[in-house]
Length: 116
Ligand SMILES: [Zn+2]
Ligand SMILES: [Zn+2]
Image (cartoon, rainbow, N blue to C red; front, side, top):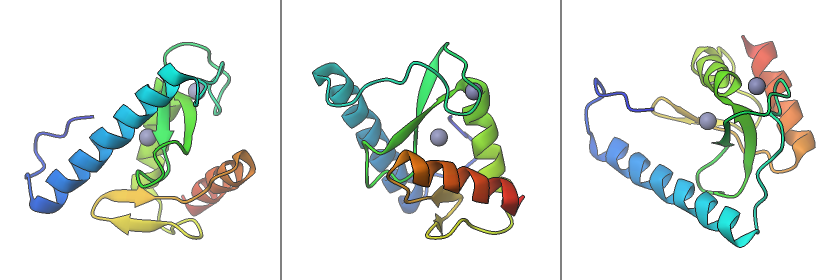
């Protein structure tokens, strides 16, 4: 989501480029069948317009699938979290969470909710 009020600092430009690369790797992996789009939102089960949410852009194919509303809510929750989930690190306004398996993802979601 574009946030035009944020200044284009070198860190932010680098982050935008990392994010762009991660998104294009998801597109390529989807086209080649290496990555499969989920059938339902992992948050609520919605089937429409799923987004790939990255836990860490350094692992571009480690994504979970969320509908627009759960995805938006997750980012609001991440921004508002007072305590970081274990293993998470902040870089500017961005929170990186390192889970890989769906079990770890579920645990991370629980920690995020508990941190609110
Ligand atoms: Zn959802
Ligand atoms: Zn996301």
